[in-house]
Image (tube, rainbow, N blue to C red; front, side, top):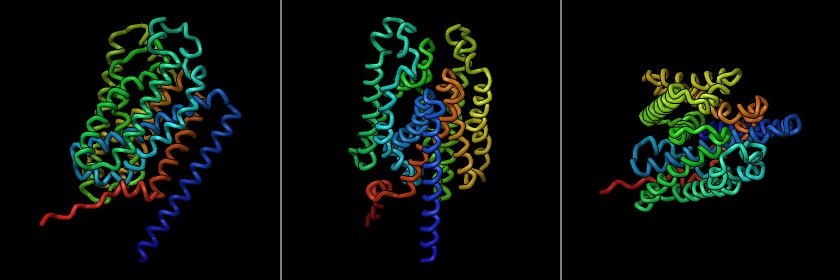
Length: 359
């Protein structure tokens, strides 16, 4: 009984801390709207990209686990399910940005900056809005359906959902991020963005609620290590190809982000999201430590946030990154509150009943 009271007190304290940080960050966004009104939309976009990566990445892991099974999925489900269920809310929070596209993207403000064919058939506000609505609606519907189905129908839904995810992430990565510089093209960026979402979900689960079971914790750490290495490899090869190709339109994109403070942010992001976890998780003791996994998860999330800041914030200035920090804290804090609060309807889906052993 005393242990239950202690656990309840700890949960209540965590909820109070999370609520305080979330409200403080939200208040900072309001102040930022007064100081840098033009940068608030950019910062909100960065925060949403990071948080949607956690939510959609959680959905992808739930679908993968539905197809493959494994104790890691059972252990991570109490975090992945609430995070995935927040996708519809994040989709609604994205909608106001669609009314401010000229303030975010150069091609929306000045259509002459892109080729006429591209403008007519792909990169225009109406098409951008339609593609975003399809992706966010699809992810939202899949999230609400996937978390409640674990039978044969759930396997089929997971398979079809991953196909939808692969298609959606291919164009969403271009629309939301690469179109910030319309002349820049990277054929591998959609894949690296998908891996980033998977890594963000694993890192968030490690920070908020690492597994209690030692073997499941080891599996979680192994997945975190593999995903980190995959992101590092794809990102390095993409930069290497750009550098070796030496095409002016693509090199200009790198040159813009090679200047301070963006170069410093890139180095810190590389260290936190790739180098630190890749080196630390080679140690078996750290792979089995909940405290170490929490620290690494927090570091990876900060690294991924810095990476998105460099990708989206460079054309708009440093003030946008300040707003992005507040936006990310607000959104991720709200996501954590859902997990800590344990809403009954979501919690039942997150903790499915165990099957009775056959006689």
